[in-house]
Length: 136
Image 1 (spheres, rainbow, N blue to C red):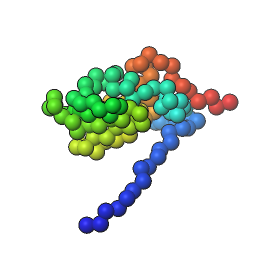
Image 2 (cartoon, one colour; image 1 turned 60 degrees about the horizontal axis):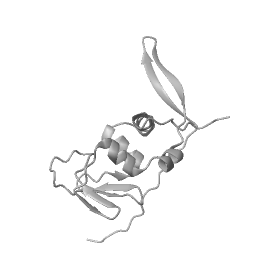
Image 3 (tube, rainbow, N blue to C red; image 1 turned 180 degrees about the horizontal axis):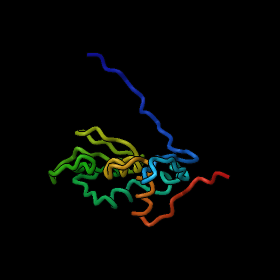
Image 4 (cartoon, one colour; image 1 turned 90 degrees about the vertical axis):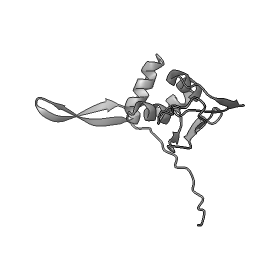
């Protein structure tokens, strides 16, 4: 079996507005919502803040590398080390469910929310202003 080296996909979540469909008594209609500046959020909110908000309790710590039960798939073993977080890079990876990403992606995965809604939800949970993108 041949090993193939792959590069991680870098995703940019930066848009001027988001469109979603709302269904009411008059039927579906589109609404335009202001854009969230995801780059600002990733800069201002640390992985450690997100982990604290989720109540993550590491079972092992080596420098800025944490290991413990995965909050995404809900490890129940208190000694689990499947979930790994590097606080320097702000990235996580679960060796069981293969969930991975940055602090915003972690929040979205645990809360089972789309990125836009997860960003707003995280700001509310941390009692922060949402960094809206100014269009004009």
